[in-house]
Length: 175
Image (cartoon, rainbow, N blue to C red; front, side):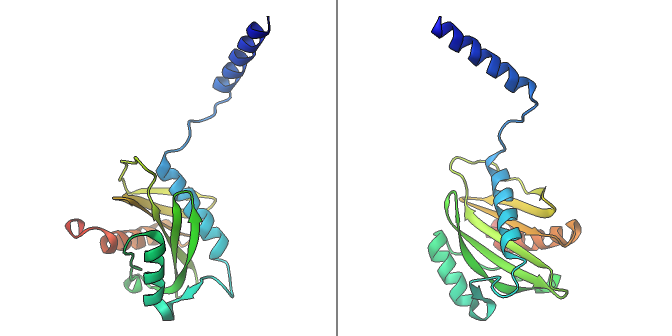
């Protein structure tokens, strides 16, 4: 009787789950976009401490983050798009250390580039766009690493920055 009650309860729970309209869990790259948007929302409004290491020490910043993330990183140059590097910081992520580079345009709107190891076994490499709580995120996987550019400067401006980032960060064959 106890086994039958557990079975019936389980089937009822399953049926309720099917009828609730819940969606399947997001793909691993969707978590990349969500995590990048959260990090952007937390650190971009900071007036006094938006970054751990400022752009005046960019060489040190890139070397430090490269060592912690486990690959040679670079901070893309967005000068042609009207954004300057403010600096960056080290974050913790589900796949280990994460690098965050922060940029600012001439009217002090901020954009962040989030770089982390990709989720193991991910074969998705598509360049994608998502909006997470009002933050535009353009994200992609390149080899073992995921990249996500986040900001609230308009989708077209974000697309231009994301294209510039991809061109600068992609392997030589993709440039």
